[in-house]
Image (cartoon, rainbow, N blue to C red):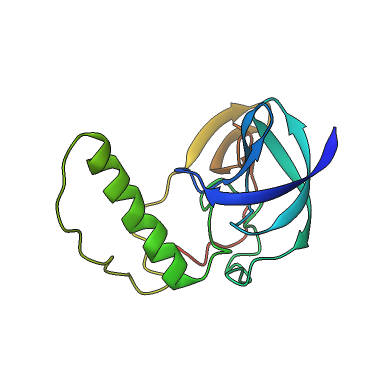
Length: 149
């Protein structure tokens, strides 16, 4: 069922979160403040369109962004991304009763990711090695990864 949703925040896995009558709904590739249409399945939804984009939305660096499961938040501008990462740490510590000062995130330069996760699958055609589709176990063909070295 396709419906209209307003994203209120980012979840811990970088999915946009919409508050609904039945609870939180997680919608990948969305940002806080956006109005979107999405096809709902239980507590997750597939983004159909962004009706009103966040001013924090940028063009992702990778052309495989919404296909590949390797990067979830390339569409968020850098400063907002750094705040989100820092807030994740603060929330995790606070939930355990730990209070301390947390310095700002130290960003890495673009195209300097040192670790990526490849998946190997045996198929009728032989061995497949590559990245998996977002929210899936399907190995997909990626021609380039601008995030990795």
